[in-house]
Amino acid sequence: QVQLVESGGGFVQPGGSLRLSCAASGLAFIDRTLNWYRQAPGKERDFVASISAGGGHVDVADSVKGRFTISRDNSKHVGWLQMNSLKPEDTAVYYCNQGAWWGKGTLVTVSS
Image 1 (tube, one colour):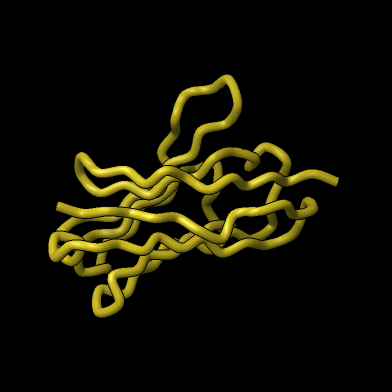
Image 2: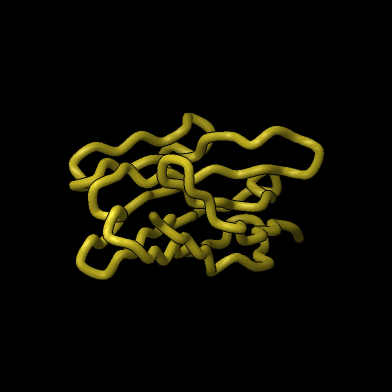
């Protein structure tokens, strides 16, 4: 079993940066792909990025490619989503996910 807790969200102006963290408990963290999703108000939850268990394979949604970077440290049971050049359309609740487990999300608001 895995428990996931996101942090690092907040308010930022367009062009700014934030680094989201996903702290995991449970031994299964190191064996599973880590995903980030986001859900904007009134919209469906969308895939943002994923990183394989060993960190060797990364996928990033086209909408954030070149601006967001996903990483993880299995020794610390932590994953990160570095978000640069943020745009108002990046405003959403961001969730980390492994398999059937989801965190409760952290809100990112990008506005001038």
